[in-house]
Image 1: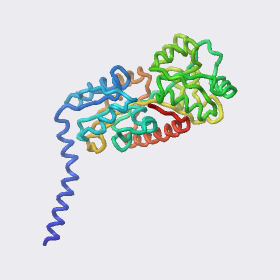
Image 2: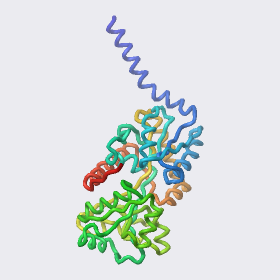
Image 3: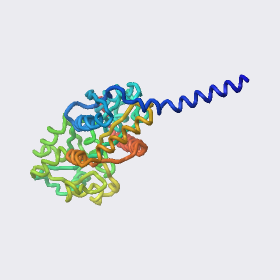
Image 4: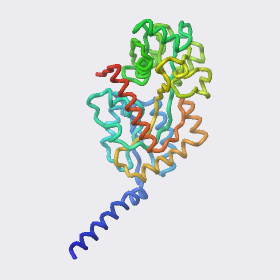
Length: 329
């Protein structure tokens, strides 16, 4: 009798545990949802959060409250989000920096980009473009690499800061291309790209959002884009890095990206609901136009595909950071 009673109790407990996420998700959301942005206001991550939150809140019948917690390439805000309750009321806007690069840069990172989070949505990817001054002697990427090969560390490459995606794109090019550059870090893209245009620095990788206007004005020359294919919507005539024909650069690809995450353990029905609603929002003509206006290529990856993509990005940048011996304070 005792064994039967224990078996019945165990079965009931198991059934309740299985039913809990479904019941929980049906009552959700019953209050505002916190959307933490791991970067300062005004940037792409923040812009996406505000545009999506307004429409997502309407779809869910609630309000999304945005809070900016920038610092250390998104690490400060990400650590806060990782410790938040996994109850469906906490979300995080993260990027390639916070969820792929930082784990190899910061020895005491306060979160694990994989174990601490559940991916909800990948808004899109943003290829970067290699640019030089309009009067630069380098007409093609092959010209630049040939000069770098003949003069190790003589050519200088600017970036928005040490450990940024612009810096790592430069290091990946050097690593795979078998050359050496001198890295010149700045405090942001604006001063860096000004020095490229004036010829004080030889080249720079930057997003199409930042560099695009200067390319169109004729102040910068685009040598290559870092996407797997040419950017048919914008820089149609600019070849990819892989198209340079330089040994070791086959399959070269670097994209910045923007995503939405939830603390690990957030009920799957809620994650699925969020993903589905955002997918519908992002597929509207208005949002497609907005995303492309930010220089991004919209994504339709599933949550499982996002996880696989994120892991591949972590592995890629860990190799580059180790090979280049990149350190941050």
